[in-house]
Length: 487
Image (cartoon, rainbow, N blue to C red; front, side, top):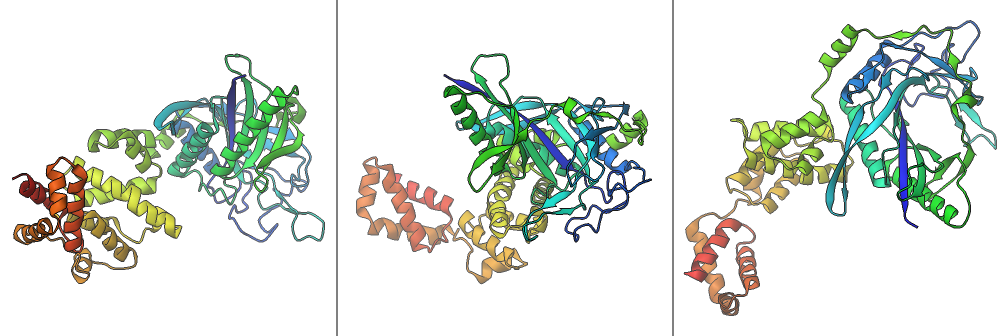
């Protein structure tokens, strides 16, 4: 039997506010346990929550960026459940009327060697508070509770069941992750729990309209774990059904060490949480003037930037998408291009700059574990190097040696080129002499080329480059060789 996979994602986005959603306690990461939990977070008698305006503005920013509806009036509810890390015995969340409704997130991913694109539909995004954290290590067989996270502001972003593979789900998670960082509403640090995904996974026979029974895989804090967890869960469900069993709705955890999901608890439905309006919080009212003020502060969005890169600079859809993965990368690319082609749009210069930012700079950043903001080679210095490629002073291979020197602290491109003897030989007379010597020393390759073997030409090019110690201008070598061989 052929199966169709159905996936929806719920993402907990920790909002980049300095204080918690209903109290003034700090949200800074890494503090000693229970040092950032105030009376409100601890649910001491007589305390009242007060809404954090900055958290609401984060929700509005994301809602506008995805083309959603911002509710003029939304309501907070109490979601009742009982865990040691939830002091009140309930979580303040939103249920019936969320602050953000609808919207789409465009995604792109590679499949079968082709770039695929679609728009994932969002159901809603609602504000809520985080719970504390249970600690099970180093307590001599006991567990401890750290309430520093209790009350941290979250925006839970929920999709429709629109995705049909783990790769699509990862593409969506990466797109949303990039967007919330782009907007400045979240720092995106998955290791610190700032961006956590729950995957709702089900399978159904191909062509069946009705959805299968879903299982929710909780708290996936890396894109790799998200993909592996979904792939395992899909295999588990298909094998279970094909062996005559049935899928039970439940919450599961992913164990990365064993690369498997395991049952955590039976899946609750909304009625299990006994939602009711929180009597301590008035409705959240967002007027049109507030929305327009936030709209005016939005940066150029990734989708608009990609379209501009394609239209103005002639970049491919893939290049435009890669360069708009973050504001840092796009800004660095534009700074390089501005310094390289100050007169305006130059498609050849744009492609050269794009290649170096996407490939060589990205590889060096990845090697050293750096973000683009910490790149040791300023955009203007990279542009100076690219100018030397354009004017034939260095080849691409030599330029990579110069880039490494710049990466290690060298400040002047021309000085590196001169001190290391990297300047290309572009003098026609000098190159002609080397070409003549190579042709004379390789009569067999000359005969083979003239007999129609193109590989012999490449061999001769290699010999010229070897004789020039890699300094010959490759384009001129090709032209000189062909003119002498075909003349």
